[in-house]
Structures are given as C-alpha cells and as structure tokens.
Amino acid sequence: MSPEKIIYLSSNLDTYFSRRFHEECESDGLEIQDINPFQSVISPLDIDPARCFIMYRTSGIHLDDFDLEMTKSIYPKADCWNPLAAIHLTRTKLRQLRFFNKHGLTAVPTLALRGRVTEQMMESIDDFAERFNLDHQWIFKLNRGQQGIGVNLIDGRQNLFSWLETFWAIKDQDFLIQPYIKAEAEYRCFFIKKTSQFWWLKRSGSGVKSNFSQGGGAEIVSIPPKTVEEEALRLIDLAPCEYGAVDILWTGQEAYILEINSQPGIEQLEKITQANIMKKILTAFLE
Image (cartoon, rainbow, N blue to C red; front, side, top):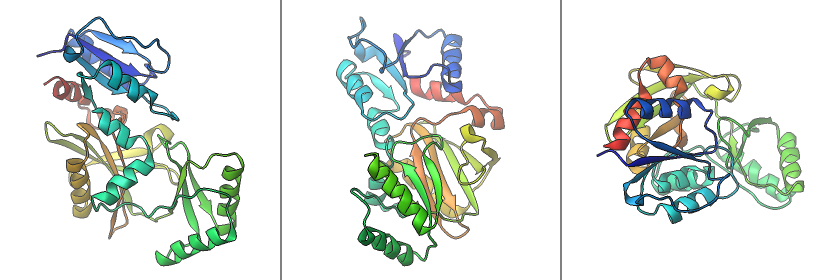
C-alpha cells in the first residue's frame, strides 16, 4: 500500500538524489512534503504518522543529532528509510568503528586522542606505527566528515605533531588518525537489502580521495576479490541499513572496511550502469 504522504527530510533539495527522488515520486503520483529539519518550526503534521513514510536525506556535517531526535518525537510510528538507527550508527566514524570492532569486522587501525599533545603521546603513536610496521604517513579524518571533506594525508612525525597541536589549540579534537595503507584498489558495494540487489564499483581518484564529489571515477565490476565481497556482505547483513554503500580498501591480500554509508549518492552509479537506481530504491521503500 502506498503511503498517504512521503515526508522528505533533507537539508539540501538541490542534490542529484533529491531531484531524482522527486522525479520518480511525481511519476508514480505520490505526494511529497519537503522539510528541512534545520530550518523549520517543529510541529506535528495533520496526518496520521502511522501512514507517513519518511525518506531520510539529511546531509552535511552537523555537530548534534537534533534532526534525529525531532523525527523520533514527531513521527514515532512512521516507517523511515533508512531507519533512524542506521543513520545514527553511520553518522560518525567512531560509532562505525565501535560497530565494526564489536562484530569482528576488519577495519583500518585507528587512533583517537584528547588533550594537549605531549611527547609521551607521540611515543604511543610511534609504538602504534611500529606494531603495524607502518611508516609515519597518516590519514587525518574528521569524525563527522563526508564526501571526502576533512580527509587529509599527513607525511611525517613532525607534521602530524603540528596538526594535532593546532586542533588542540582551536578546541576541536573530533577527529581520527589512521595509518596510510597503500592499496591496490578501493571498492564500493551499493546495496538494497530487501531485494538482495548489489552493484560493485571499483573506484579511483586523486591522492587519498576517490569520492565522486571530489572528482573520483569508477567502473562497474561483476565480481570483486573474494575477501572484499565476503567482508562487505557480512557488514551489510549485520548493519541496520535497508540500502546504502560499503567502501572497502583492498591491498591485494587484505580487505579493510573504510565505512558504511547510509545515505550514499546515486549519480555516479546511475550514469555508469544506465539503470534507474532511484526507481529500485523507491519501489523497495514502498513495499
């Protein structure tokens, strides 16, 4: 049964995903109400929330989860895609890492720290690098970064110390440090869980970023390396996401999960596959 109304929560209606979603809903004769949770008056709608579906597309680097709490309060019985639990899990890198570690998934070794950087802290970082037989090349990631924003390659111990000291000084230590792992390839698995549909992309980019929004490219692959496929499918099975994308780094011997994205863009995938991915998402959403 189709919902009485689809509530489309998004802070940006100009994205490719938003435009395509509205096109497909209009094609199916579905009514949509657009709400920007960060620019709105909070009040219940004049419809039964049990018959209201929400397509969640809030993007941007937000420092709180106000939008999630608002949704829980106003639409407690509504079906939400992705489920709020999935969005909450995937919104920060630290939550994802906790989830990966809990379920024994292979993630990139990661450090987090708080406080002014001391020589003792740097020695702990040295020990970490030595334990994993790493050079002092590091990936510096914002905890709530997205689309490659906030990802930087830091070369050398002294440069890392300068970055850490700078972020301490500006009172912003919401970041992670990961070793730079030289990879043979990066793979993305886009999935719709309900219909067991999977699309594999081999991604490429400049420097340490392969994001489409940062100029990265991709090609469709029918079968990824077996270890990559197994690790991705394990994560997809465990995660509360109904649709999304898993990014995995492949060294030629080991597969490292980079992240699971509960709000992936589809522009690159639709262009490469020439398939109506949005129609597939909407159909699964409404079933």
